[in-house]
Amino acid sequence: MAKGFKTETDVFNDLRSLLENSQLEVLQLVPPGGQAPLSLTYIPDGAERPKTIYPDLIAFNGNSIYLGELKPRFSKPDVEKLRSIQDSADAYEKVCRIVRKVGKTPLSKAPTVISLLVHTQENAPKVDGIVQVVFLATSGIVLLGGNKAAFDRKSSSIESMISSVSY
Image: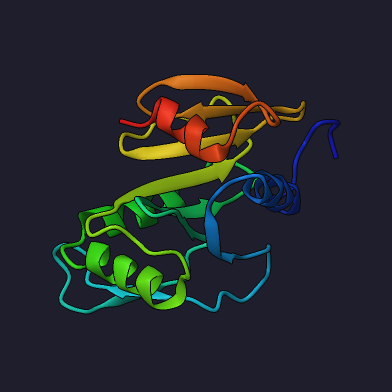
């Protein structure tokens, strides 16, 4: 394995560490090969049948819900999964329902759902509407969203990092 290469387990541990220093209530953070307890069943835009997925990450604070997928490298299928959720007419309400049912923190009436793609590929293509959290081999983090910004892992919370690159 090349020096500096991160595995999906490394990405999971990096994100877990970042979330421990946040104000987010984490409902689901699935390790590689793990079984997710929470599922989201929704009807994709243009589909007749519902689809069930198991997000790797479901976390929230009172005003925002973070729904994410984790991989060691940029994943086009995960982008498509997140896009399908965003484009669905009923997914937003179902995500909010899950958070209200399972979470302990009160959720605002109309929270923002933020789609996250978490990986290690700094040169990944930009994807409109999806914030990419990119863990570098060094202690840095790059976020790709409406803007691109670099952070030290200990410099600020994930919420403030994401708000600095969001749309």
